[in-house]
Image 1 (cartoon, rainbow, N blue to C red):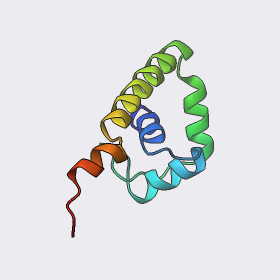
Image 2 (cartoon, rainbow, N blue to C red):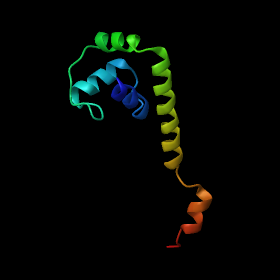
Image 3 (cartoon, rainbow, N blue to C red):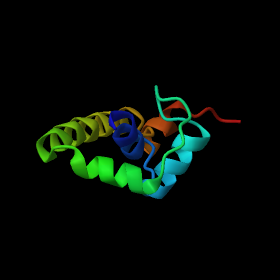
Image 4 (cartoon, rainbow, N blue to C red):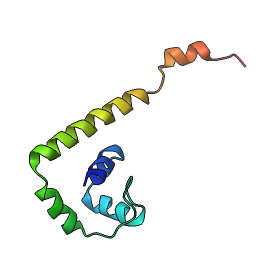
Length: 86
């Protein structure tokens, strides 16, 4: 479940159906390719205690925000200073 939640957030997967497809075709993170049904994943997610899921999701979102900051493109002003005339 952790690999699934991490993958959904980091890869911005649109929904459970897409996550299940990717899990079956490619595997997710440290989980090898695995065939599961959408219903099984939904049921499993419903059984994860809300407090644990909230903690996990909060940590994943914080890491995703940090990752986003690190990947920001440089501003045009900074790029202009480094531009050489041709």
